[in-house]
Image 1 (cartoon, rainbow, N blue to C red):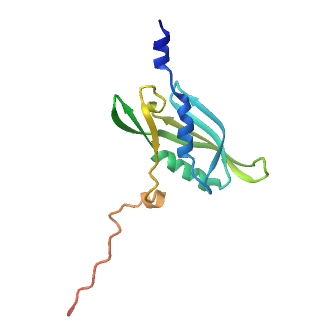
Image 2 (cartoon, rainbow, N blue to C red):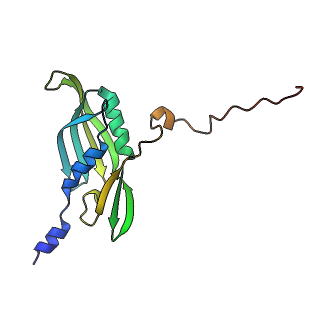
Image 3 (cartoon, helix red, strand yellow):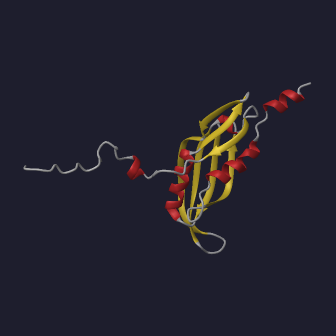
Length: 157
C-alpha cells in the first residue's frame, strides 16, 4: 500500500547526466569530472574535476553554471528557475592526468534547485544562455559610463 507513495516521492537523479551534458563547456575549456556527489538532504552537488585549460576553464565552467536555468512543466504549466545558487570553488591544485598532461584539479560545489530532480517536474531541460559577454570586466562596469561619441556641430564655434 505504501509502494505508490514511496515511488511518487523518489528523486530522479538520472537527470544529472543531462545537466552535466549542458553545463560542461566545450573545448578548449572542457572539464573532466572525476567524482560527482549529489546530497539530496541539503540539495548540493559537489564535482571534483580537472581542467587542462587551467583557471580559465574553471572560470568558464562557473559562469556557465551561474547562468544555467532549468525549464520544466508542472501540471502542464511551463516554469523556469536558476539551476544553481551558492556556487563555490575550492581545493585547487595542479597535477598530472593519466597522459602526463598538466591539469588544474578543483572542487566545485553548488546548491541546486529542487525542481531538477523532482518527480513532479516534467520535460526538464537545461537552458544555457551563450550570448553576450559574461566576463567580470564587462558585467562589473556600469553601462551608463560608456555612450556613443557625440557628433560634431557644424558652423562657427
